[in-house]
Structure formats: C-alpha cells, structure tokens
Image (tube, rainbow, N blue to C red; front, side):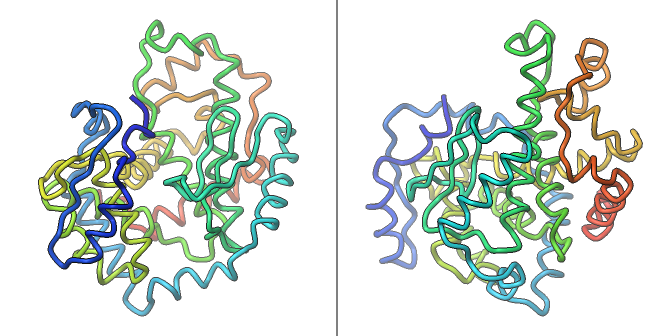
Length: 320
C-alpha cells in the first residue's frame, strides 16, 4: 500500500459538504481497500509529547497570528523563482540531472521527494526565506541519506540485515534541518501536526477542525492538516486516524536524545536510511569513504551543533 492510496476518490465532493455544514464529518471513499494496520504502522502519539506540543503552540501564538508567523519568512515566491532556487541547490550536490522538479495542484504535501522527483504543490506557498529550509529537509536530508544508502551492503536487503523502520529518525532529522536557517527556532509547525494527530486519535474530523481554530486561520490549510490526520479513514466521525504526521515532532525529540549521547555525530546518521537504534551495528558494515554530507554541516560542524542545541532548548525537548 502507498500513501497515494489514502487520497479519497470523492475528496472534492466531501470537502464541499464539510464547508457547507457546521457539523458534517466527511464520509470518504477510496479506490482500493485500506488496510487498517497501514494507518497505525507508525508509533502511536503520546500524551506527554502532546502536552509539549500544546506548550509550544501557546508560546508561538501568544503574540502572533498564523499570518504574522508566515510573513517572517518574507514574500511568497513565484513558480519560476522556486524552480531556479531548487535547481541551484541540486547543482551544489551535482544532483540536477538525477532529480526532476514537478509542480502540480494535486500533491498533498507542499514539497516531497522520492528517488528521482522533487514535487512541489501548486499554488506556491514557499516564501523567500523559507524555501532553503524546505530544501535542507527534502534534499539535504532525505536525498543525501538515500544516495548514501544506495552505496551500502544493506540497500535493498533491509530484512536480511534486520534493519528497523527508519522513518522516525529520518523525519526527525529532516525537521531539525528545516529549522536551521529560520530566525524563529520554534518547532510550532510540527507541533501543530502532532497536536492534530493526537486529537484525531480521540476525536472526529469536525472536532479536530474546531480545536485548530485558535491556531490556523487559513481554512484551506486547516482542512489539509485535518485531512492528513484522517486520510485513509472512511467515516471520519470515528476515532480512526493516520499517524504519520506525528513522527516529525516526536522524531525531533528522538534524534535530539541520540545526538546528546553521541556527540552530534551527523556523519554516522548519514551512512544511509537507518534508524538510530541500528546505527552502530550498521556502521560496522557501512562504506563511509564517499558519503555525501550536507553543506550546512560541512561548512561548520561547530555551528551546526550549536544550532541544533538551540532548537532543542527553545522547544523544551529535555522536558520529555
């Protein structure tokens, strides 16, 4: 099963019904039968992390609105400007021939990368000071770890090497990197996603929607956040949910705890798409002479370490 299977076939019809009512919960249909186990394949959201997410949201929105927080990143870029910035970033790693940049209004995520494509959702939401942060996430983390993984003996043989799922480590690391260049070190965007997923595990679509009202003024954006937490579910009045969006915030805490114990050893994390729990064992077999490392680390490892620590401290990760 793939993430694309979780996109409802009657999405637009149910969206219209939802916005036309104050009480309606979408009744989604899907092109394929959804395996319930797929919806809960990631770690369940925890109350203590939910409490931290609430604290971060309260701090972020005390004297700010959703719009004012976004405006800190500058003006919204044009599609041409986004394409140029992405191409330049890919060229820095000699990856401009490996990846094709695609634009479409049908993508659920505003940016996502796979083995050969970098997908950008339309209309463009990326801002002049925020796009580089997105590229640190998608290319500087996901793409480089993938390319390094392709060099390793376990590539395509994860079961043979008994490697655990790596998504919590992967997304936690990438989310840290998406904040490195930000003037505001708050992880409020990922805290908001965690907040939504936790509530989706106990509440209906409409109840999650209402709970997000103090934080998300933009109705289209709020719809997408709740949809992501309830995708794959047919009757969204139930407590069924999809928990993938919780791993970004919990993953940051997970990576922070590993970094503290391992002296911020980023090169070890870049030996491939490996979970922190498997790193030491995987390193015994890893080819490390030609690892691709992100320039935001190699330009100044000390500055990288300081920035990661600042983000963790600002977001109270040691409380968990």
